[in-house]
Amino acid sequence: MAEPMHCYRHPKRETRVSCATCGRPMCTECMVATDVGIKCPDDATWLISAAAGYGAGVLINRAGGRNGGPLAIVISVLATAVPFLVLLAPNLLAGALNPRPLIAMVFAVIAAGVANRRI
Image 1: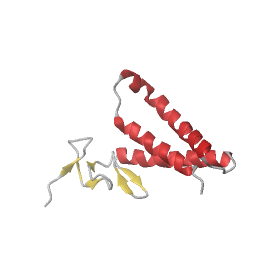
Image 2: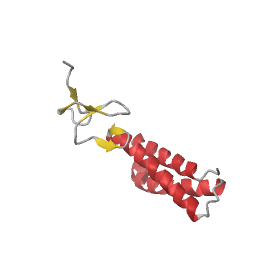
Image 3: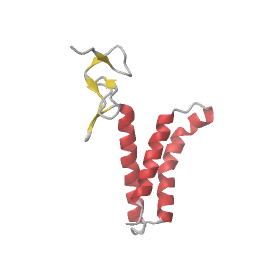
Image 4: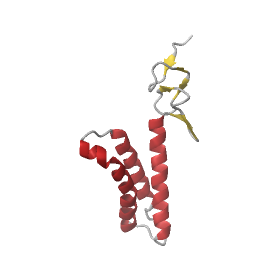
């Protein structure tokens, strides 16, 4: 019989569930069901950020008459990055920054830029 796993966020809780991306064990309270499997909250956040960034990029592309190009990419990237920066500003100013929200912002910004590339 396999050694019991414990949730990486709640070490006292035994579990048989692990993240489909990173393999970390997690309890049912921590798991996030996605279309591509069960994810830990950290990996699910990055997927959601990328989807939100792509959606923002598509909206800006459609609002601009579907022209795309460098100007639309810059506008999409800035429009996607500003909300993240507003949320991260207190931590940035305090000097206590967790890198996970920054990684989520990078995924969102890249997705927003990709949505506005010329085809």
